[in-house]
Image 1: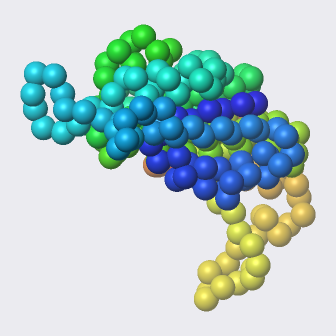
Image 2 (image 1 turned 45 degrees about the vertical axis):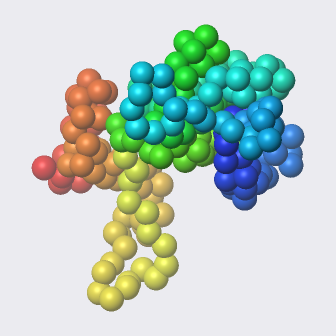
Length: 240
Ligand code: JF5
């Protein structure tokens, strides 16, 4: 899979890609992340990437020429997404869709915006990581890289990485514990030390349901409510 990122702070994204799990995937040849510096496609001595907005107003707008030139020179994998709060929201389903393909590209916006011809004529779509405004798209690009990269088959060192058990069935994780079994009077649930693996599996499912009902009822709603199997599990472990 190839992912190209276009940015005026390329070292930020490149450093992240090299240091994270994406770096190991890169060494194995599974993931080819290419970061492009928009300043390399400026033509003036000051390497200017922005200019004041037509019509007036505060702030600066990213100029179209370096962005078109950079994208045309790289001939990146499509779709090319503009990162910004106006886009389709990234969620686990979209991350899985992107991880199942051959690649895609990300353009990081900055300042008060990007010349709109970039959005309408160069980019294929827009992508948001949530309803808040960042100073630039770089952090959003890193979120997309991490969410997608860890789903690429083989990246986590096992073939099942793409299944991503926790979120793919729409529930929060069950609680995890490690040694010691007793810590400051707090005990690890007995069932986890019982060796009864079928019961452990049912207990985990029940606790995942309990947590999701309490913290994210919207996720339960999205799965179409509780099934009769779900209700039986909650009852088995005395979860109201
Ligand atoms: C950006 C103009 C892009 O702020 C974001 C963002 C928020 N959610 N997802 C992405 O991107 C940077 C800021 C201003 C365009």
